[in-house]
Amino acid sequence: MNRHPNADWESIKKRLVSNPIKLTAIKSMEETGGEPDVVEHNPTTGEYTFFDCSAESPKGRRSLCYDHDALNARKEYKPQNSAMNMAAEMGVKILSQEQYHQLQLLGTFDTKTSSWLETSRDIRALGGAIFGDWRYGKVFIYHNGAESYYAARGFRAYLTV
Image (cartoon, rainbow, N blue to C red; front, side, top):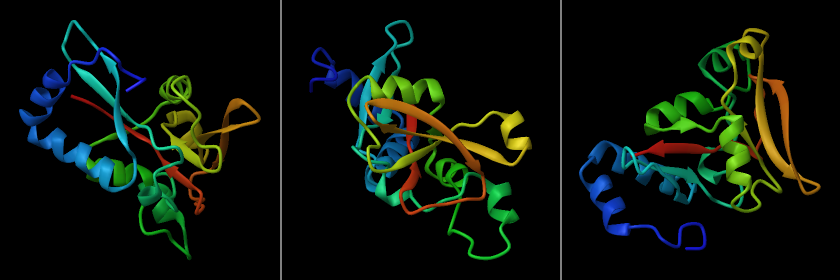
């Protein structure tokens, strides 16, 4: 409740219930361990934005490479899926660098894990992808080969309703 003391929960509920596809996406965020929460309200459009607010990268979305191309590029020991594929299947999007920094203003996240972040085409074209975490009291944005995957790296999602 400290993130949104003046939230109009009836309006939020009404927007979710009136949009079953987005309600299903929020349910997917919850079921995979994301702990979705309202982080922003646009008074002009009436839209609410939800971010994954779990302390660590959602447990049900870890051990994934970055995208479909990276998944196809692996010759052996392929992960079960990619972060971008799974996000699309869930009906959500992966946080950008800017959104990740915004999230870290709400609390301390990813102190033991890391999260893939939306990666620009120029970095992807070179085979890389970016991820973020919180270490030493700071947000760090790093790079890795997009085909890499680790048990402690997942992805954080957002959804606007």
